[in-house]
Amino acid sequence: MKKNLIFFTVLIFVLFVFVTIPTAYSQRRPLTATTLKAGYFNPKGSKAGLIFGAMHSWIIDESVDIGFAVDFFHKQHTAETKIAQSVSTGGTVENEVRTDAQFTTNILPIYGVINVKFPAGRFFDYYASAGLGYAMLFSKEQTFGENASKTSRFYSGLKWIVSGGFSYRIGSRSSFIGEVFYDGTKVSRDKKDDVGAPVRYEVDLSGLGFRVGIRMGFH
Image (cartoon, helix red, strand yellow):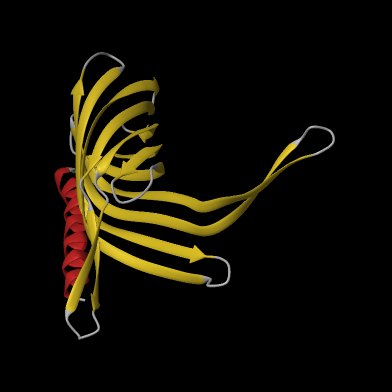
């Protein structure tokens, strides 16, 4: 409970700063940008899979914008056993496969982010980003058969991420982006053992990934 309170406090503080600073710097209506991304992420504590994200940011000047982002990672895989194989009279080979277990992993981080742009031409820019916030992991395991069971677990922890990439202007208010990122997130859950002693279970979600997307709004 104490750990969750600390992380929620950090998250609220980061979002408050990232929302209020751009307004303070601008004497007119703040300029904003929205970015949609999709890519591939390979965390240590889970099988690799697709990751989707969205970011909304406020423009400080021609080089810096800050805002907040939300990502969603989903991976589902099964443990299977090949039971038998048969061949029909027409020559079709059929495998009989039993699903023994199904595993589902969902990662949902919310974090503040700062982007710094480095112009490289009229339509082309490089950029670097850093983010800090709160991550949640929802894990579900389901087994089938005589001893069928279903288990759900929730983990949470501090989220941090760094990335570097490029943007290429494709319109007056739109750019194509591509980036490589490293996520250093680790999450945990607390539980008491049979004698009442506190035990912490940790999952390492750190790893590399890449994404492409569209940035819409102020360049």
